[in-house]
Length: 266
Image (cartoon, rainbow, N blue to C red):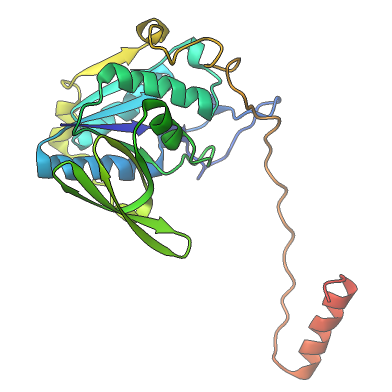
């Protein structure tokens, strides 16, 4: 059994977010981290590995420096890593990205008992589209927003979080699951894991390695093959300090009502 986990290296938005003159993110000037929801997907895979003895493979599309992130995931307990990297893939939107990742997963191979995990969404785009799009392109059943996962043979019972409650779904493998932060608490790297990380298999797939897959076509990958693109990106202006009114007497209430009336709120 294999568990394939799709992960993304994203800008660390806890620091300063830099924007290029054309409105795109200046990723080169920003610190990067593993997308938080993807860490929950990795933890789900490692937990399932402990229960079943499965092999865990992490897959990411990005520039060569993403190797550092993948080595960290190997240090957490993943068994091998695959980086999909090439200039032809640059500028891909969610549609093109899912084309490329699906082709990479095709090359790894998905068999009867295998599972593909993704994080719910990436903090740099917040679209939650890539995981479901990969499932559609691979022809896999999918369950999104997984808050609990139980495996029994070739069946996964998944507690799926909704806006107003939960839904329990049973799905046969192979399948694709997107994970949310409520699912688990990601583990840390171990000292032994750090040493082992550099002896585990690490593969780079470029355009030439994937070009024979039917999903890979220069008209459907990269910037030119992306049906959507970012028109502009900017930091919203800071809001001014709010007005605080103290007291719960009639005079304070009348003052509040007057302010709201002046702003045509009432």
